[in-house]
Length: 294
Image: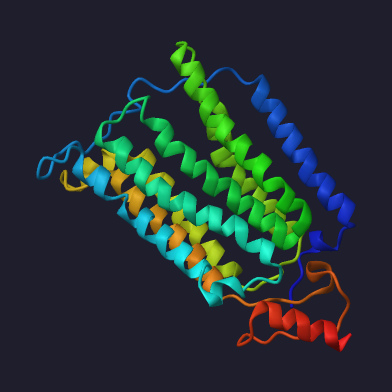
């Protein structure tokens, strides 16, 4: 098996590298100037109504978020979902992730009916939940379950604070959106560091890569809203395509969970070899079998 050279570095060095990158990024962010919402933030290319529903495609394109979120929650609460983790605590951030996806569908639906500052937090807050939950889930799986578990609530509060900070400052006429944007765009950086520096406890990285690819495409669609609407003959805007594509990205996170199986390694699992991977067994059963073989 190919091992990234960086994973052979001392564990303290790898953790220190992540800490330094995070501290440096937050320092730069704090010193950066205020970033208000643009005057056209709430204006989207496709404003057509359908059967009395304003901004119909912008609104209805959120349905994939809701469906994938509900599907993920149903699977995670099924017997197969409950037994698919080496540690039961690892399931919690994924429950939060798919709850966030479900509520993103609902919140974004509500926001796009009548886009405004007052409705925007209902769209942003669930998304911060999903971003934070995915980072915590990856940390728990690759670095330390207990530390990640203890960090869930503080990280969720920190994510919510980035949205509320914008909302409060916007109400005073000095809205600052930079902290929320930082959370959205720096989360993939932290994920990449965790994946590159620490070995996995599970297979399925390919599905995560697919999800990230769809997320990148979604952001491109979002930034080209008007151009896409114009070039597609005013049939659909880039923002609606962004909703659908981001929903597909979340679906691939679910596929990762449904198809992966444990990779039992000394650093990832925390007990010595030999290790046995049996894809047809639950994660908990494999841990028990491995421990009995020591």
